Amino acid sequence: MKHQAKFVSEQKQQARAAEQQSLEPAAREFASAEELLRFDAAQTPVPGAVAERLERSTADLPPPAGRWWRRLFKR
Image (cartoon, rainbow, N blue to C red):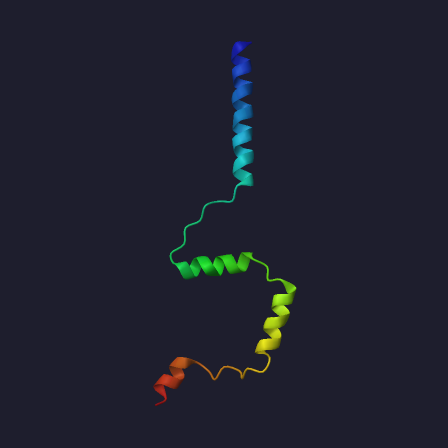
């Protein structure tokens, strides 16, 4: 009877530990700060008002001229 109570107690502890691990985000390592920022940007939703202002402010910008390295080697 005593062994069974100990076994049940251990099972409960293991279940709690597994539950906590599923609630906590997994630790990640990044090779660079830029990689961390890209990951964070992908996880963070942009508020609608900010997205709208960004669209308006970039609407009159000319399209990119092409690849920078092509311009470099054309000279």
